[in-house]
Length: 97
Image (cartoon, rainbow, N blue to C red; front, side, top):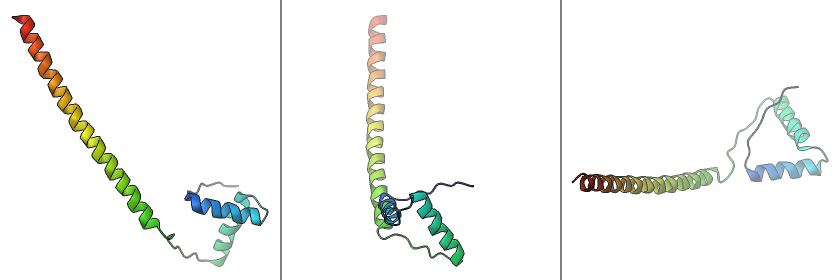
């Protein structure tokens, strides 16, 4: 028997788990039955879950904030490295005199 993994959001997982429990079957059996029914019917209408775009926008906004924060930290780190290098050069010059 072949196996495959499917990624679903938490809400869909909970709904599927609830339906499986209502049918008194395991989640694997429930998913297997749903896939079999879809294959037997010959077609599946793919509908994006409501809110998917909103979720993706939120995730993108979060990632953009993380990038901005990391960019600021990088700039600060480079400034610190430049200051450290200047201090080092000054100390070396003072010691060599």
